[in-house]
Image (cartoon, rainbow, N blue to C red):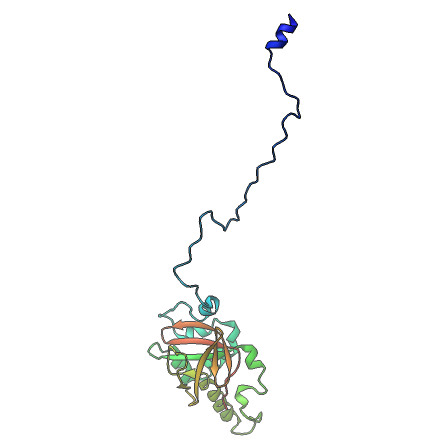
Length: 205
């Protein structure tokens, strides 16, 4: 009886009758990759995007240069100078004006061998000392203001002090010439012009 059952029961192959199949290889795609071939972008990559953005702030046409200079702590020294000169303070607040202000950083002013009001000499004593200091400060401020905005690359313009300057783009950086002073950024584009923040001081004496 058992022999007949054995003949009808299926034969179970030994465990090692069939070799183990290797585990299938799974291709892991990088999140940025795609199974379909990539197609080149229709638009060329934007050149120097970071450098470009720092020179192109959003315009605020209802605001004056007088309003936008004050909040910049990095140029607080220059900001205080504008309030000391009544005629320039009025000009900066006038929305009908058209100016480019080239404001040096505090660190640039602090590194000067003499204070801006000292001019070519630190002697501001005597009866005419205050007047001489005021004239020196006026020269400093006017050397950092232009009666034009926007100021285009290569455009030679005289400052309010009468000196001709221009700017060039060098490897994505704006440089004011002929002094070779780098523009850190454009701090504002407002109703009466633009505020440029400089890493150095322009010649003013």
